[in-house]
Each structure stands twice: as C-alpha cells, then as structure tokens.
Image (cartoon, rainbow, N blue to C red; front, side):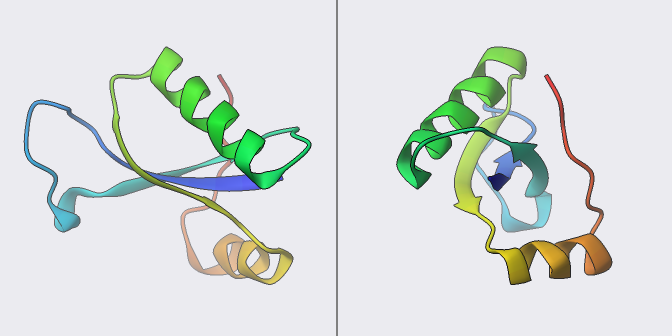
Length: 76
C-alpha cells in the first residue's frame, strides 16, 4: 500500500497550507488503519515533521500522482 503523508517541516510554527509538503511511503500492512499507524510511526521516528494527514492512495490516485506530482517513494 502506498500512503501520501502531508506534513509541515517544523513543529515550532503554526501550520500554514502554503507550507504543506507531501511524501510517499510504501507500507506493508494488513489493513488501512494499520498502514496509517505504521506510516505515522516511521515519519515520527525518522524526522521532526509535524504530520497533518495520512492518506491511502487508490490505484487511480497513485497513477495520477506518478504523472502529475513530484512522486518519489521515501525510504527510512
């Protein structure tokens, strides 16, 4: 499963939509909820980012992201 994680680079400032970034994680999980938990833990353990939202990408959404966004899987 591929998850898109929306985040702010710093926990020190109030979140602003203009400063939101995204990264993509491949997570092996039994359910969507378990995948979100694993994705959050990976980001929290390896960065100081302020996580805003974690979204599971459907096949169609993933294909769109690959062609229209700065798509690159992040590995920790």
